[in-house]
Length: 207
Image (cartoon, rainbow, N blue to C red):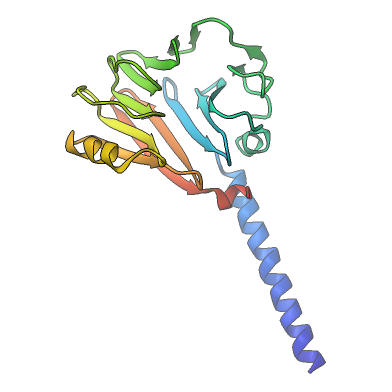
């Protein structure tokens, strides 16, 4: 009987050790591997907060969506313990962004009231809170609105938005991705092409 218990214990220990190694190996590979003029956007959900990590080949920007939890441990998984630019006092970046416009490498970030527009040449990614939608090719809906914009190619929206709004997005034939609190969404954008990858927060060892 003791031998059986020991064997089971060793099996469980080996399984947990292997699982941990696999997770750590996977985590170490979380790299967007951006090319020149390519933009990477990571949606970072937390319990009661949300952030966007915006990356270029050489720089990174942390932008709060809502809430005041600290995403430091998550940023470390991306090698971004101290982003180049920060729009929030929650995370100390190398530079604190105070102005309405930020020009960095090939992108321009413009804040208009609560909304943001991230531009790369003639392509715009918008973060929408309120007001009117203007010149958005790709958009992240933090809040709901009525849709009349026909230029939108791709829309992200929070999972707590209504099914009515979700149906409206589908009715406009927009490619859509729901932003869930138990997932990390990685969005890369280069000119007219984009890629979306979803990862469960299990891989980041976040409760």
